[in-house]
Figure 1: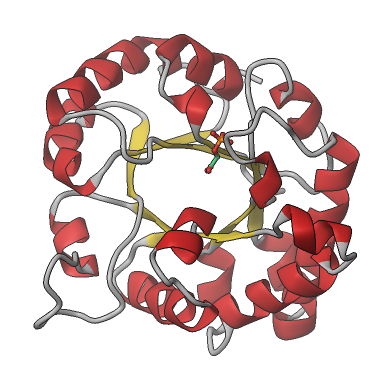
Figure 2: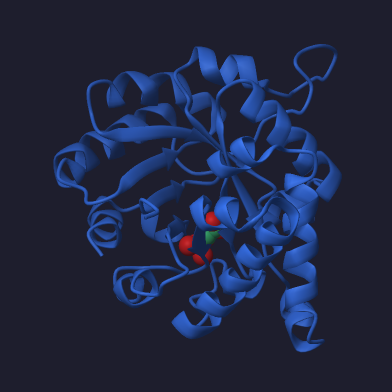
Length: 248
Ligand code: PGA
């Protein structure tokens, strides 16, 4: 039985003060959350967020990290640094990073390995653009992204990874994949994990849906057998909306 996990991807929103205010609003609302809950503020908010979350049931995640341990990489942040702040999860390979910041399958794989080596749980994003969906290559694409991200991991390592299926055309657009569509593609992703690492690993690994998930569609999506959670952008920025999604 896979434990559901819902994560809020705050993207480039909220100052440290605003992040703490949002966390203070969330804490009482999510104290009885029926699933694992993670919030992912920007790097500069992580220290303040970790303090504000102390003693609560809400876990802390980052939105990215570098694939090297340390060194001359101006502007980058390492796994060690995240760990030292109390971060437990890290989003890797978000489509916005693939699209605007030259993230590749190869760097996502290196980052995934580095995160696991440091005891961070990677939330690895995969998903197709509208053009790719219309070309009929969704399955091929998500299978390729999934296998590339998990390449070289042992079954034990891979079981800790969370994958987020995020169709790019559904992100921030208000257009959600139908629950059936999302379930089908997530089944394809799970099939790719099974091919690479066996059925047991595929059955244990959690796969979220992301892309305009909100209080209205969360229960339908979460009711699907392959969907183990959500990666929430826009709806994670308002305490009431995020709480409603978490209480799907
Ligand atoms: P959205 O973003 O919920 O605003 O569509 C999801 C994401 O990009 O993780």
